[in-house]
Amino acid sequence: MPYPAILHCDLNNFYASCECALNPALRDVPLAVCGDPEKRHGIVLAKNALAKQCGVKTAEPIWQAKQKCPDLITVPPQFDLYFEYSRRVQAIYLEYTDLVESFGLDECWLDVTASKLLFGDAVHIANEIRNRVKREVGLTISVGVAHTKTLAKLGSDMKKPDATTVITPENMAETVWRLPASEMLFVGEQTAKRLHKLNIFTLGDLARADEALLSKHFGVMGARLKNAASGNESDRVKSYYEKREIKSVGHGVTLSQDIKTLGEAHLTVQGLSEMIASRLRRYGYLAGGVQVHLRDHSLQCVSKQKQIPPTDTATEIATAAEELFSQLFHAENPIRTLTVNTFALTATDIPRQQSMFDTPQSEKHRRLGSVVDAIRKKHGNESIERGVLLKNSFISDHSSDEDDLLPFKRS
Ligand SMILES: [Mg+2]
Image 1 (cartoon, rainbow, N blue to C red):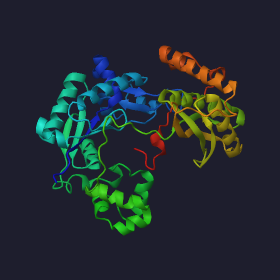
Image 2 (tube, rainbow, N blue to C red):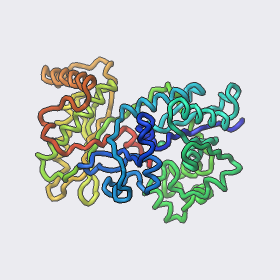
Image 3 (tube, rainbow, N blue to C red):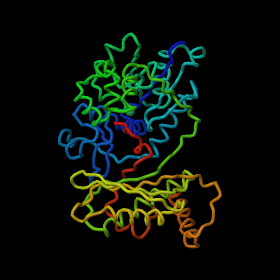
Image 4 (cartoon, rainbow, N blue to C red):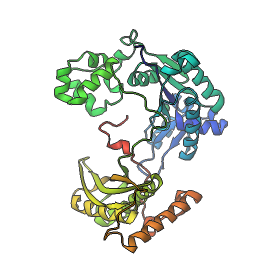
């Protein structure tokens, strides 16, 4: 059987490129898309080429970036705009195959194995897509072409911007195997440290490593890591139309001031629960469980969860979350990061059984929640907030997605 032909398409400097595409004058100035400078999240989310030339790095604090680049123009993120650009680019991908699997707003894998007869070989398709995205949308992409998803992703990282990189079984050794193991998807900081202890530093080391040794240290992931590094991975590209199963919905914040009392936590938990409930309603899910995850000053983490009667209302989620928080919280350990997750999701269109919990009160909260959603949809997120939120100066927007619960985070 011939090798699969997989592309990994990565939009370059995505947020900053969208801003420049919308307002071409920004191309000629060093530009950074930044979080709120008042919060701990006042960091660079993305930068354009000129800012990069000044040494501005993603994730560095704004003040530091401005030191390097005094003329730096900063703009707040406009996620609706980025979503729209992402959708337009994906529409081009979909003309070549329905096997388009997105990985965040700016990255997609495409399996074009079956498209070759119609459109030419994988490299030809990669270059054609790259040119069309540039011409039709005004953004540039880097494309990796390979026979596995992991190798294609490594490829798209190797030449930027606006480039195609081809990884083959023949050139794998002199291309990807020289890279540090931490460049590979699924190898986070902790995994990399553990690999170093086993004298595994590069992807070549990982590909050649003893499988039994890896299994001993990493369990089932051991073989998966080795296979991914050696190009023997069978993970397929999912269809664009395959509905992605959402297992949990959560939000977390890193606070601009540590939480030292239960009262301070109350405001934050309310705010997070509002956002979660709004997303649950948008996705059409009820949550049957709530989990609270805390990280304190010394970066120690604790978490606890409980089951609740299925709900999509902020009040019920917040009540459970506050109960869990009070069980986990000790005043001597101020809290730096607070995350609320909901799980055990069921689709809202499954008729709910009436229970003693379905009081008129909870029905009222449900209706109130839907009204809030409708107002926010029409007038924006900022337009309506509960009274309790108006006092809340902590909430900085750091949304955790269901992906955060996967064993490995994307870097
Ligand atoms: Mg990108």
